[in-house]
Image (cartoon, rainbow, N blue to C red; front, side, top):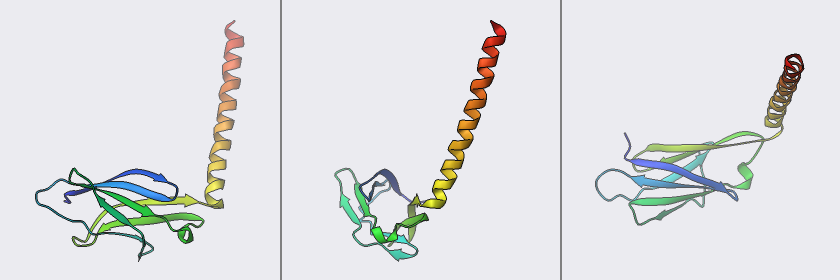
Length: 124
């Protein structure tokens, strides 16, 4: 089990941010690599904080943002450990799924409204 814990803090303006904390003994300097389709991303920043933790910033290159689901893997290279991952979902295929779900929810809500109105009329 890893003594490094990665916690996502936010995704803002195309940069994924998280905090990496160390729970074990000893002083370590993590070497972090973030990959997309097995290719390392450039510009990954690991900044040491005061409390045995590190701020991690992963800029997401525009050229990797495409339709579908894009998965990014966060690894500690020296220990060869996977610490976490994150995914971006976008595009027309995703939009159709969301629109279908919203349409289904609207239909169910309309059905509930009709049943509630009918109930109110019958009980008065």
